[in-house]
Length: 262
Ligand code: F6P
Image (cartoon, rainbow, N blue to C red; front, side, top):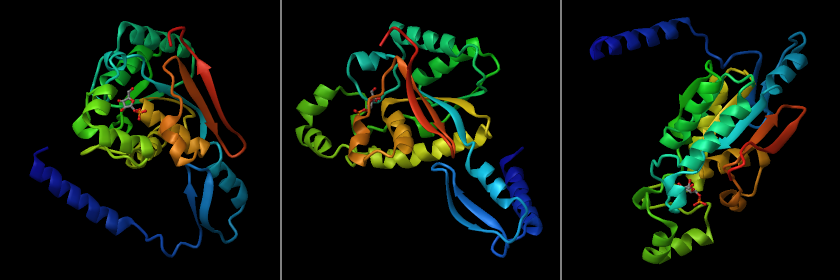
């Protein structure tokens, strides 16, 4: 559709929605849920039959199995470089194959990745074992943006930018890479990505997220309620994944090994 036609079509659609929608403000019954934390924030209910049962179903049964995986070894990992869009090494590919074999007979329909080669390569391996699986690359799951310092090594950061390096050590959670991100700002977009992934998978239950060290630290911290100063130091291995269950009745995080190559 040409751009102008698409725009007019979009405006018409908004008009149509306006004509059809009732405002929610005067609703006699409503429930506002924080689905990430399994909490009811506000509710108003005037005699709906079985309301409490319905509410329990809405709030619980939210995450059955969220498999949180970090990509395998990359060339940048070998050289201790940050950021970039490096490929997996031979070892990284082996880890990807081991992971795919591990999930071979699992009932998983969705895998969410970042837009980086190192996470997509793993999703592709999983697809070889589970052909019906759908892959969704999300920018929200891209690794912390290291801005002007993208692709340099930790040693170069320490030697060439000592003040910056020191500041980072003092408060890693709030430290912002020049023209990049901090863990604090990363949290916002990762949380958004997670909500999007859970919404898209529509309560399917079992999903895989293939992320990065920083990103996975944030996701884990959302379930573990960690102190912010601990978040940038959470251990995120490349030979193990985290299996997260978060329903109203059960909250469980297990770390499981899938490869001999760490
Ligand atoms: O694996 C390397 C990496 O993902 C970098 O791209 C990123 O900057 C870093 O890990 C995040 O970990 P830390 O904040 O501990 O440097």
